[in-house]
Image (cartoon, rainbow, N blue to C red; front, top):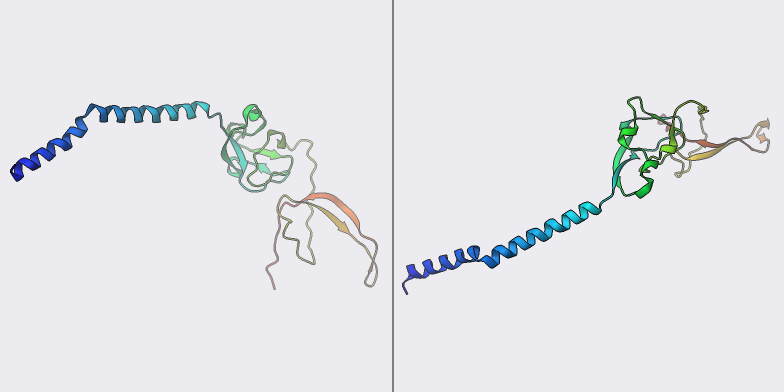
Length: 173
């Protein structure tokens, strides 16, 4: 056999694999099985897009589309309990309770300012807050009156369950 006839024979064998009906049937079966699995998974996926808080949300805060991120979740029959993007009007909603960052936003935590009674209280502290106190945390505010030079009355709770809206660190010397 001459070298040129050997290369022609090898080229025919290489072409023959692509023309082989078994190869075509195998590729077709793989394609059909992948398409079948994809369609079954897509049909079984009952997740919906609900809103989650981008950052902590505090009571009285107006919540707009910029404050939330869409999150795909499977909540089953509880889907109507959470805020979806179509629930947020252009003017936003008002939070009636604290919502942690990343938490799904329940419709029950949204409302209007009607009937919501909030008061802002600005405090200057002599010492640092614990690391666990962050925006959205509930804290009790205590006070003690000075009755003499360096002596104080017993401390009492002035505001129980106050919600931290903002923390401002003093960066001055």
